[in-house]
Length: 257
Length: 244
Image 1 (cartoon, helix red, strand yellow):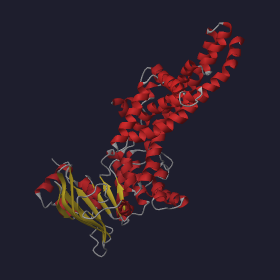
Image 2 (cartoon, chains in turn red, yellow):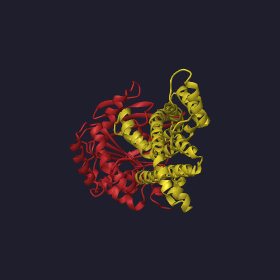
Image 3 (cartoon, helix red, strand yellow):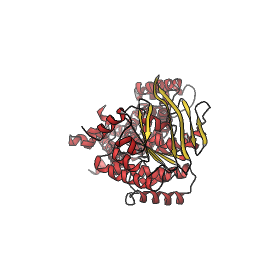
Image 4 (cartoon, one colour):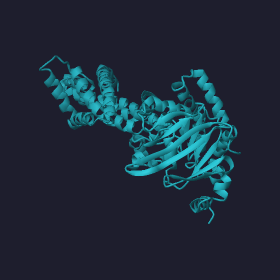
């Protein structure tokens, strides 16, 4: 997989800054995600990579910086942000969380159908049909009527992915999607993500799965101490890292002593 | 034996009054308690203070005192019957207790679910009606049945202002031939039937909550069945609510 240069930029973040209680967590990170591109964000815990990805759908409001979707300015920290403009952005950007965050009182099917009805205004049957399709796509056709508590972590995360897909997002953000799942169950989630990548979905994923990043990502971005230290192909970043810092990280995460 | 059956039949109107009273108290108390619970989660400090004072007063007063205050106090200004007095007094009392339950239930909505709803572009109203309220309705049923049990038992206090509820009618039947014990025992049995029924519903509701949220609710370890078994299962002991 190579960087698709012919297609435009799906999501562009410029100079994103964010502080919590006087501590600067993001010191001006920029990223361009091309249509159909898959970017893996790696880096040590507490480096700001989760905060960065949460800024991209405004779950955290950046203190400074801008966001563009398909060349259209959707957020500018220097201007007033209305609740409806935040929702307009979120409608176009999907999010998959580390802890799945399914609605516990709703079945898997309802989880996937709900936002389609409420946010996109799809009618009941259309939303249901689309939900069934997406649950089938992630291999959960036999679990549609179950509540999240009756599903394994891997299954819950696949419902969450289906829930995001059903909204036809332009980009999906993944915030450490496999970190809260038993190692054995991770494979099924990674497999679904790989299929999505192959189907041309635009994806930005914070992950600790170096091997997966190597296989599925077009580019890898390394964040440390609130800064993007380097970005490059998996080969450049993971096999022959340009920085000593990245080299150390990759060795440690891969379990090489 | 026949004597007791006759007594039970004679006490049925009193039982009916007690049940109506309890239902009316809950009809006042639960919506009020829900609003108070919302207010306790509000960002507005003054609103929280007002509601905390309300809750402290009506949980602090013995229910009988509240009843006396309403019955003897309000009658100075307007005409209130015994039934209405009970509904006002115990409605406020149950609202005060329910407020705390609703407050905790609203605060227990997992933050991640709220974030998921936000990330899916839900509006604030949609988050309240589609995420918060379903969660609250789910977890709140078992403890609310607990409130219903206490409220039902509490209606016996209405005897003190001469209402003809279950205890009052048992006593007055007994006084006709000065054999008080038998009607009281039958009344006791009737109270027990209703509260046991409610306890059983509480257990069923609790199982449902467990099945859906995947964890035990706070009241589970307090159920009669659990106390009889004298142990808590793994799920109960792992519950964060109990661990605190």
